[in-house]
Length: 236
Ligand code: PXP
Image (tube, rainbow, N blue to C red; front, side, top):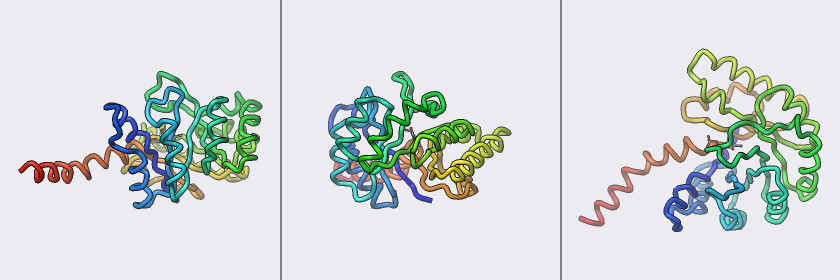
């Protein structure tokens, strides 16, 4: 199973000051040097974290694959066709959400999504659909021509360690099995952390996990001590 790292939070910190630090491109390089198989960024309509210039820089420097998360809009389709990332992951996007809330309603937008992904596929871009782990969404996804689904692990992550965990996990496992039976490759992500990620190995055939928040959060504490020491030494 591979690890894709979402670097959006690095850009969030950078944008809080409006300067250039921390640099998401440098962060992506560190992720690659330490085992990331791909770098994910979500170019949001409001550009709240990753910006167009970041995506354009990433595509030039990455040694691994760029996975561009994006909404199903004409603007994003145009950008993807111009930049040509290795893959795109289509997500629902609400302007006021803190993070991607639910999966894409593929069943309810079957024709729209099927038509939307056609030019992307023709351009050689792999297409993944971020969906809730339900039978209907998996079946609908298999009809669109997308090569991948990314199963939303947000609910599983939220109820991990509670009585609801088994049901949430079974939904993921069954959705992954069905998707593979229907010819889709399966990724998963959202809310995964250092505790709940272990069970992903119980799902056969998962290709890649996309993880952001918990890795960046962990990085604060694995790096904070060293950063303070370096500054303390400088000002001594
Ligand atoms: N996959 C998708 C489609 C997402 O939208 C996100 C969040 O941007 C992630 C994975 C990563 O989620 P997290 O930051 O909770 O690890």
